[in-house]
Amino acid sequence: MSPSQQYGNHPHRPWLTIVTFAFTLAAIISLLMRHWGGSTTGWTLAFLIGAVATLAQISRRYTTTLQDRIIKLEMRLRADRVLSPPDREMLWTLSKPQIVALRFAPDGELPGLINRTKTEHLTADQIKRAIQHWQADWDRT
Image (cartoon, rainbow, N blue to C red; front, side, top):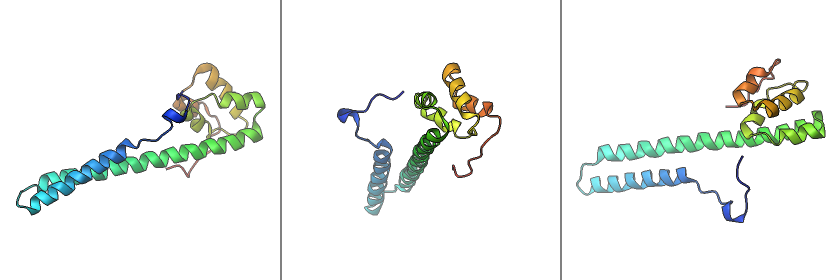
């Protein structure tokens, strides 16, 4: 479980963005040094590759985080429709990966899987393997 969020710990500090900025700044400095007579082509290329690789990581992480938030919202709407109040309460005590895995379960299997996940401490992979009638999600990247 994540720690509770309060004013003192709520800011987002995107460390990968800082890493990207550092690689980009190093590449610019390397290019300027080359312009002034040095031979730094290898370093410049390495810094630019580092910046692009870090940007790719940022893109993938932000995409999957946003998808997880959307899935949690969809599960909240679905839970209101198909689950009893105690089952809804139990659902929201599960971890994000467990809730995301449960989205593949059809409405009829969902209450039993939630209970089983809670009592047996199933992982996301175990939840997916326990689903009898898979409900596909072709929109997830």
